[in-house]
Amino acid sequence: MFPDPDSQHFDDASKHGRRVRNFRHERGNWASYVYAVFHPQEEFGEMLEEVIYAARKHGIVLTKMEEFHISLSQTVIFRHHWIKPFVQSLRERLCSVNRFLCVADQLKVYVNKEKTRTFLGLEVSTGHQQLLDIVSEVDKSLQEFNLETFYENPSFHVSLAWCVGEVTKPLQGTCLLELQKVVDEFEDSDVLTRFYADDIFCKCGNKIMSIPLH
Ligand code: AMP
Image (cartoon, rainbow, N blue to C red; front, side, top):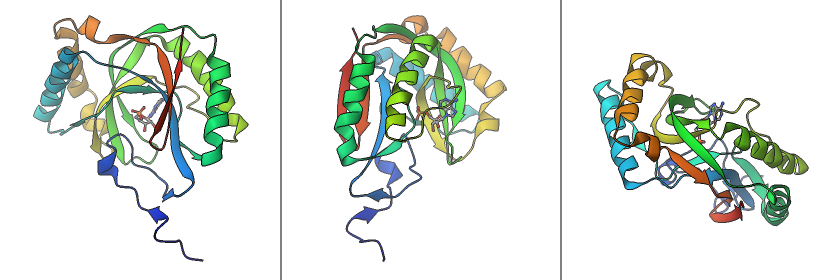
């Protein structure tokens, strides 16, 4: 009748900077999502520090993401025995997809569905169509398991930093223009914001499976 205290715990957001879960962790349930990885060069970190510093001058304290990626699904809950067949389904769907160039250079503000967290991200300006094609395949695999598909009009992005609550208004407008200027004027920013999507990853709980592109 009551939940077994050993098999459930409330999520500790400090342990995974990127998302506040809107569900309880339960044994047998695996929080899962599909994404492409962005491995930044060292100077990208310096550029990000400057962006965060500029935001602070507007009274907005942002925390840097621990890793950088482009989400290709929402976070969905798998039962453990779904992991293998889901990844297999995705492998088959993506087996003929070629690696492609992504450029993520346009700052944009995102809020999670629960409106508990605001993200500053770099939106993709090159690679959008290829990402849409991949999401359409990911969505088909998700539908096989009756899971929620991705945004109908996705805005593909690399989240850079976040803060708690909905902070859209103070970040947008003049502040965002100034932050974009920091990015645009940073030395070699055009090089730092481009990368090849070589693999698609599926993370289920603490397991990470990769699907290489050609
Ligand atoms: P991510 O770093 O990929 O987890 O994205 C940060 C947040 O952006 C997530 O909580 C998403 O729900 C949110 N988001 C809001 N609008 C969109 C959109 N149109 N496309 C993709 N992500 C979005």
